[in-house]
Length: 118
Image 1 (cartoon, rainbow, N blue to C red):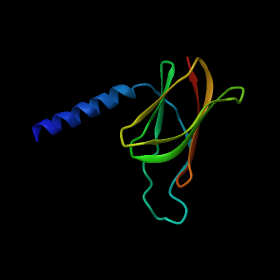
Image 2: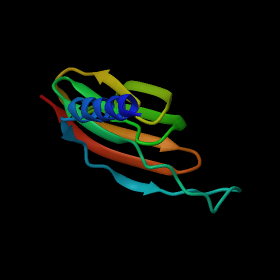
Image 3: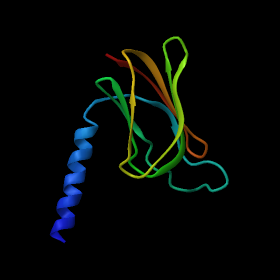
């Protein structure tokens, strides 16, 4: 019992250390829609900039999240359908510049935000 509490505490501390970057403010809608409504939507992923990396953190398990990052000229620099368990962090290295992050899910909606990598 004691061992599992210590392991959980250690994992919690590590996840706080990992996401100690600058949050990327996002706007949009995140709610369940479609034939399975009303269903409680999982928490939306949060995004941070830390050094030359973007971190996308999953608080709840989520499948098929379309993640797109475009640069200031509109060119796509990252695009992938991502799935992650609770606590998963996707790390995307980027060079310095101005970017737009879009996270879209067919059932829950879309979130988007602009950020700088310095």
